[in-house]
Image (cartoon, rainbow over all chains, first blue to last red; front, side, top):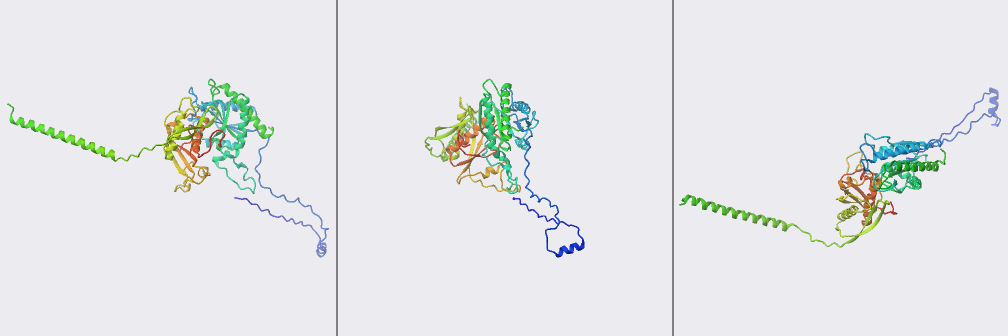
Length: 265
Length: 227
């Protein structure tokens, strides 16, 4: 659908009081420029198309955290009766505290275990309403080693959010399955920042693309962080190991905020 | 002295036993002949000699999240779906070997493989809200994805036991999916799209992470290949 606008012209008529004799004299004489000048209003401003207001630069940056699984959905079994849902929740709570102390607003999908499983579509809805600076989906596994960073495997596409913001651009709805496509490039950049800070903390890092929900449905720069054992003796649930990762991720988020807001926060 | 009636009875019984034995032997012989006749009528295809060929397997490694192509000499059936099934079964079987770089549980993994010509023709639907007859969960991307003339969609029916016992994790599941897709891409050029079902039914994820509801493009999944 193409939006078109039409604008009406405005004719201003100024009436001045005059005696009957003077009016008849002036009416018979040619038009002269001595007509008393009335203050004219400034030219009417051409209405501009509505533009989506940009978020104020002074607003606190929002980070979306999604500890995966929960409720009856345990996720991977990490040994010693430890479920993935418990490890992701513990890590997310630590990360949330670190981000809040760095002046971020943190939105999470869960603060405790759930009574019922939370579908990935609902998790994505929460994230997309938050307009987050970055979205982090937390997973844990017993296989592999170190920290695995995954971005969406969708091919990059033009940013859907910019369409339809003026009268000449037709509005294009964003398909739910490809919501992340417009943010894939930014997600790769966010993954690079995370990789650099994790490597600086001497943590082994593996990056890649994965067909993972809700990653594909997020309209924000999004990365899935999967915590694998650091070594044979350090499991994914190790507190010190998690704290190392939390510090690196929080540092990466501050760098990401500086890159995207020019340090204005 | 044996009475006469007893001798008559004895010989009568002996005769009856003899007749029954003859009848039994005749019946057995008839049954055997009938069985042999049925077996002989079974059409038996002459065994075909299949020469070993070189196939490419996209082998995954958990250590560095990589997939590398390796060659194997295998003698497989000529029928395409049987060939694909055997090749994927060989791939999964290699993951169950000791010291595998991507360890998976042993056991049957692939129940069936089906091939469909692209583009898929929508089924006739009586549902007014779904006039195209697109199955639930089938995205516009899946049905409208680009394909070449003569391209095919491979539907891989995984066994429920394989999916249930697969290691859970983004890396492990993604590598398994990419390994199978990469193997099909390397050996069957007509296959352009791949879908997975488990036990004949759609399933959300392989083991809690990798999305099985989408249609995968058959691409080179080796490390450094187009993802």
